[in-house]
Amino acid sequence: MKFVVERDALVDAVNWVSKSISNRPITTALLGIVIDVADEITLSGSDLETSAKAKFKADISQKGKVLVPGKLLAEISRSLPAKPVTFNLEGSRVLVTAGSAKFTLPTLPLVEYPTLPELPSASGSLNSDLFATAVNQVAIAAGKDDSLPTLTGVFVEINKNQITLAATDRYRLAVRELTWSAQDANIETTSLLRARTLADAAKSLISTSQVTIALAPANTNEKLVGFISEGKTMTSRVLDGSFPPFRHLLPTESTADAVIEVAPFLDSVRRVALVTDKTVPLRLNFSNNSLQLEAGSGDEAQASERLDINYKGEDINIAFNPTFLTDGLTAINTAFVHITFTGAYLLMPMRYSS
Image (cartoon, rainbow, N blue to C red; front, side, top):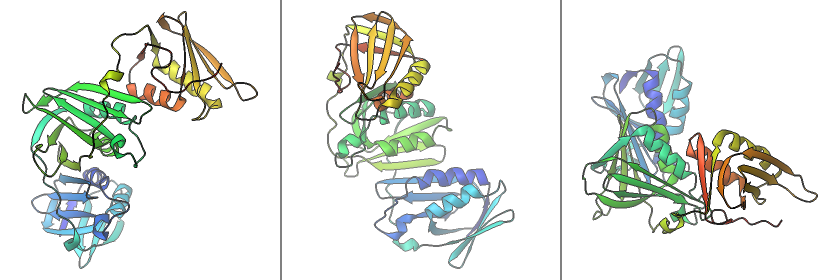
């Protein structure tokens, strides 16, 4: 096996594939990245739940296939100088050279590497930036507790040309709707995908133009979802279980609403929250086109700040977890936020004593 590739193409491919490598694999082979040199180069990595492949062109002198330590390959690739990179298999080791930099990689037993699942047929496509933005806005609300696996996922509902993404950790809920170009104009299906996997895929696809989503048919034993974009593919097994009903939590009527510029609001939240922690709420008082932010009481550290806002409705006093509020304001990615209320404690389950 011997080939020469441009450094940036190598780094891009290795970074994509290395996201699917397990940190605690059940076999040593799963620590590796497969380098398959045929008419083009294909890199593969997997933790048995998620599998990724990346293809790129290279100047190929000799074909072959080898398994090398994945994390080490990723670190070496990123550290190489901006020069053409030569890979050359010499016995049981791979020599990597770029300019005057030289590395020798050990190989792992290729025979122990599992057969990766086949990518399902394409179901539809959408703009990569739109997909990445939507995923980031929703995945922030997914749970981190692996003892509740259903809540660590992002619920994906496809109804013809509309996709709905939703996630919750029981304390907050994020929902985003967007349109896509479906292969089957009448497609209707749902999946529950790992939030971390979906977020990693979306982040890595930002530099591409389109992402294709591939869903396995409902009648197959292999419950998979796939993502395809410009030589990169990823498959991930869906989570078992049912996502809790959420649409009834999104009210259609309100008794008060506020329009607030996000940047100064976010700055104020961060400043006032300096005297709080995750167990102490941030108090927000809405009235007369103003918002008063307060935290702390008694002999504890205290902070307050006032903002001019556009507000209509009854006076509202409400308490928020400051981390959740900051996450939400950061995720919406707009200049202004529109907040609606049906009551003082509908959205955030943190009460406070006056």
